[in-house]
Length: 326
Image (cartoon, helix red, strand yellow):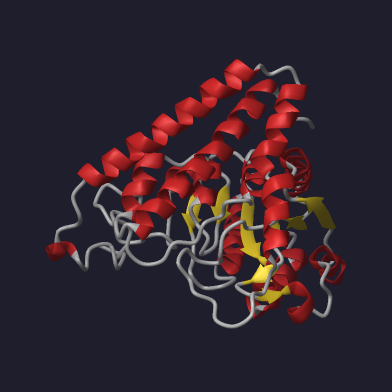
């Protein structure tokens, strides 16, 4: 199922939102305006947005420690996201989650985790919930190649397959778990080939091509909604920046400058998708207008966050516990 004209425009907007949001976020982090750590997903926008475009707002999604792109890809509000990064009360988690723990139930984002592979069992639980409640909702789980060697990956995929849960497991394979390459850490480096061991389809896609990611995900979503169970998608992508902004990696470089430059100049997902749009008769002036619109929206989000107040210290323990029984 190809993307409609509206979907193509919206996909470009979301990819640009991620890129400009994280470029500005990197600048603000280096300026000391964002506390904690900052992990940018620049270079991985096509995988994120291509998958999210296949979902509905009421479908669940879990992300990773590289968190900002996933909520934006799902349609979350930029102002509330930027406020959360700055630790402000107007943030999506009222300033209490920060960069690695974003959640927004209004668009189905149940949470993101600094724990490697932490979202995999949560997404599986969402799939189980949908099945028990008898809805046709699905759950999309993003994780990196490093998470595949976590026990939660194997336990969750086995359970989802056994019970035919409506979960799409999407591995953003950017080639490195911090500095450890796939070749040094995986006995089977082709992650999608692990799927048959769990009795589910395994699909490999070019993660820099938004259209192929969307098509693979929409097929998986269709299977899940029909009650046919989970799918494992491996999207080969690449992060342009370091694992963490400002992280000093001692010793020999784990990847060459030529490798990074090649991806930046030849495999930039924004540039690749822009070429597709131009080939599909979108005008240069329309795309430029969208680009200016997104740049303005990100600046508005920064102003909103900077003008917002931090949480009152007296509310430190608010929202930590839920007591559903009167």
